[in-house]
Image (cartoon, rainbow, N blue to C red; front, side):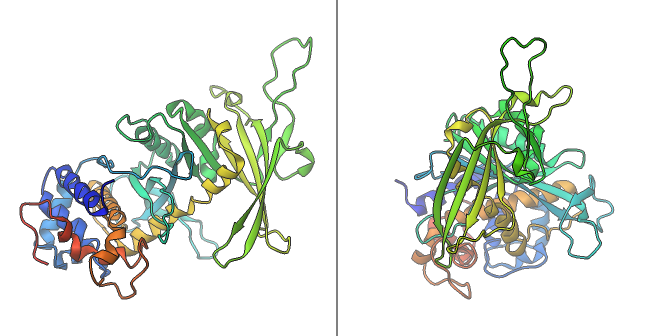
Length: 422
């Protein structure tokens, strides 16, 4: 098995070959993004000791980078305890309210704490598709392997994410090709259009949260001697009305231990082959799904949440996913929000305020490479000497330990023409 140093060295060589123009400058910028110091304007990254050029050259390199992101044959750790490869899909706003000349701006969703204000902002929106590796012993559970794409103002963010998944999951050169895949998303990905797209990824199972006020329908009952068009929908299944719920097809309970050491009981109920109402040109009855109801109880038997969690498990191979696996898989979805928080706070994801939209997209891809490099270097922190972070973290932690690795990349070799003097 290749060592962590060898994997990081191979990634850096592949990344250097990926940059078709100004490769040395872009490699130094990726290394500078791993600095333990927090720079506010991106131009200040040119002050890092591993960056040998001025800030003007940095902007020229970003403008010249136009390659589409992929994972460059990255050694992705296969699942060990899971029976499937786990992916997540989400989106995040990039506010640009003062960029009057920025192309393709629009009104995008963004949480707004001001009372009475609508949760919108003027700017761009980015879709994230990420592989969620299993948590390592003594490691952080927050790492993801990201792939980011800007959503056009005329496009739907959910369908953009589905298109990203199609390109990523069906690539024949990646290790999960033709294997069982699970994709987790929030309630916006439980819309009918996401269910209809199952033909694009036949091996992928979609698990999405469902709002508690939705209404679905049970399979129709077959009646002997019935004439006319066969029924597509049966009785109503109102998530807000327990009187419309039939007996669950399956029930399971499991126990979990929280971060504070408390034990929780998780009760899961499952109903199979439910369906949504269709419309002309979209026969949704041909896309049934499994519905899960999850309630978590504390040690005293009291519900932890005010409302139950409803999950939708859809697409062809959904029967291969057990209810407990679906619940545990969806619990990994908050890691996507952690990626956006980490890159916005520490890697200046939304700090690059530039008029050309292409350069904004290029900056997002460069931040993606910096995050991947930190992930690959996460286990090297204890073996590369003292860290410059103020509070060293355990091996694998994303905030302190890995962020102090940037002066030590020379230990695994610099792929450029000459290594910078650190």
